[in-house]
Length: 201
Image (tube, rainbow, N blue to C red; front, side, top):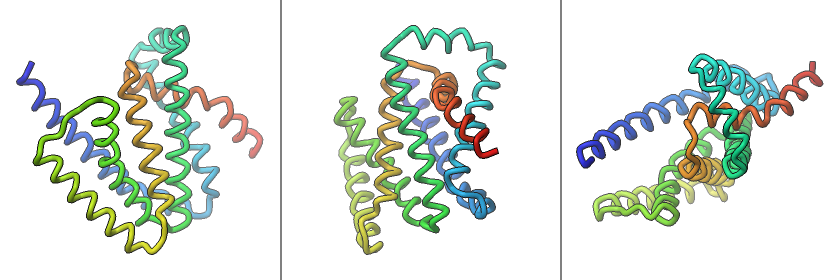
């Protein structure tokens, strides 16, 4: 079992790095949609994510497993909370780009890993080595200096970090496949966003 831990950790670091690189490129895409209202982009993001996740779930033959989630109230409650958290996170991010607050949005995603570490330590009882603790302290000090340099309370950054950090914690504690969970989360909001899109049309 010990031999798997370093491999899982390495894979986790690589996946996280790839995710943050993609997120870093997102503002370039959102800026192409400058003329579209931010709320409209957020609604369409949820709508098309639900459809895409549903197609992937069908292709994987996992619809039966997704239906089983409905029978478990705790899973439904947890995924409802995570659905609200991730949709709020997406909306804040899209609004931050439309308001030309890319630096503050980036600060939020720099804060997020540190917040996730703190959540892991306090809620999941994970332990930090002295070296990692020193790295966290240094990173925290750097982020504090950057926040002070902004000259105002970074509400956007804090909103992004808190919603995404709590989302990660909820999903960590919810025994559901990642894609199945994403489909369920966006599926919960699908009727609402679909109705909004039809109203706009």
